[in-house]
Image (cartoon, rainbow, N blue to C red; front, side, top):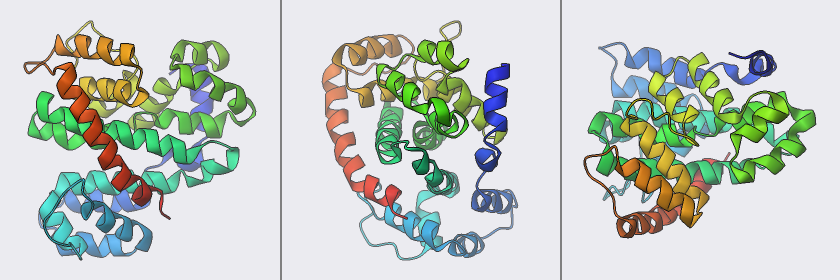
Length: 276
């Protein structure tokens, strides 16, 4: 880790630990005898997270035919891994709420991140296997988490840094503060001891490391970020690059249809994620 990033991470001790509720359910999931009811009881200790999780699983994103009224029922339907990732995503949103006080546009940040999350999971149906698909939503949701680190660690420079971000040019960040948000995000993911593939996807969401064939998760997050950014040339170039590495290339027409579906699904979820 370079010295500038190391100092930034040290200034973010208040957010560098994983959300407590996620740690608790992870410990229980690792125990083979744990029941869904036991996991539900842990979630119920945080009324905000409990309400949010039920709202998410009852949204059109999952499309279950009937209303789900209990956390234990939700777990049985979405599966343990998806449930674990939903808890992680919901609790991270809550944990970083204080960043709003810095003037950081947190609502716009989560709106964009949620777009990437949904797009990544949608692309995963074409490019990733079932196990990889389970990680895609959280990988997309956290892809820009390094910006939240910067918002806390570099408050005095945040106004100038925010002028750089719309251009999606990490090199400009490196010139200005000595590191960029992809590095900061990847380091935070590592500090949380989450799967290395998540930190790789975060690190490469602007530029793929093509020295080795990228993993499907990395490709999906990279392409999803291009879709959320919305620049047609960037989308086309990203799609051509990704299609070189996958068995099932996606056409521009199919991608456009995905984009429309992703936008609609985001509308149904964004209010839930931003609710307190």
